[in-house]
Image 1 (cartoon, rainbow, N blue to C red):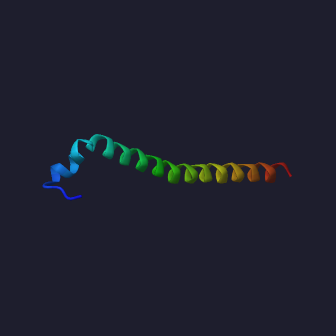
Image 2 (cartoon, helix red, strand yellow):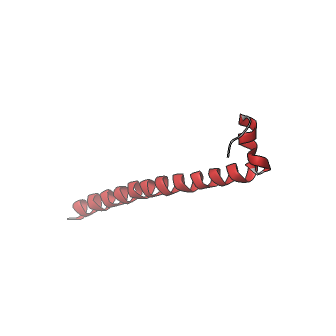
Image 3 (cartoon, helix red, strand yellow):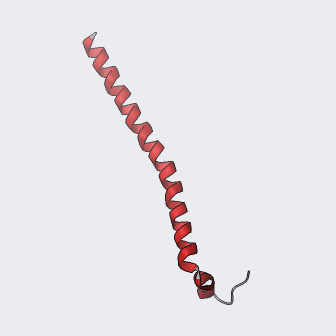
Length: 59
C-alpha cells in the first residue's frame, strides 16, 4: 500500500485514529511488561536485604 503524502500515511485511509491508537496501546503494554518486573525485582531485593540485616541483628 503506497500513500500520496505523509498526511495520507497518518490518516491511513480514514482509519488512522484506530491504527495509531492500537500501536500506542501495544507500545504502552510492552513498556509496562518491561518496567514492572524491574521495579518488582528492586523491591524484592530491598526486602531481602532488610530481612538479612534484621536477622544479623537478632543473632
